[in-house]
Length: 65
Image 1 (tube, rainbow, N blue to C red):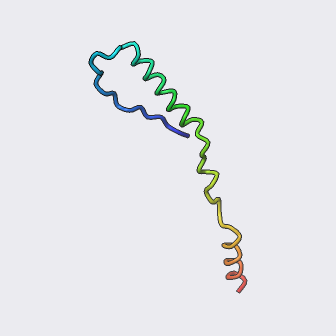
Image 2 (cartoon, rainbow, N blue to C red):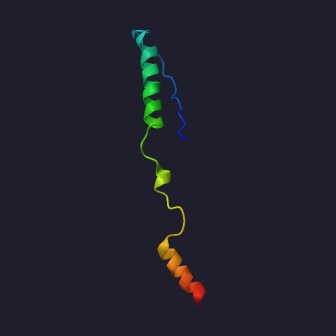
Image 3 (tube, rainbow, N blue to C red):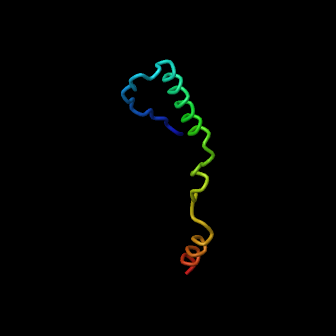
């Protein structure tokens, strides 16, 4: 499960319109949320889940002797 961490807030820019900033922050939050929530890369699908056939072949030979 992905966690979303908000970044620290910087000092407001002098002379910047205050009405645009909340909308920009809102859009930035949701953009980051969707980027992480719907990220197609799932590393757990690529991790080896246990010993493979080569490991079994080596260890079965060793246990037969």
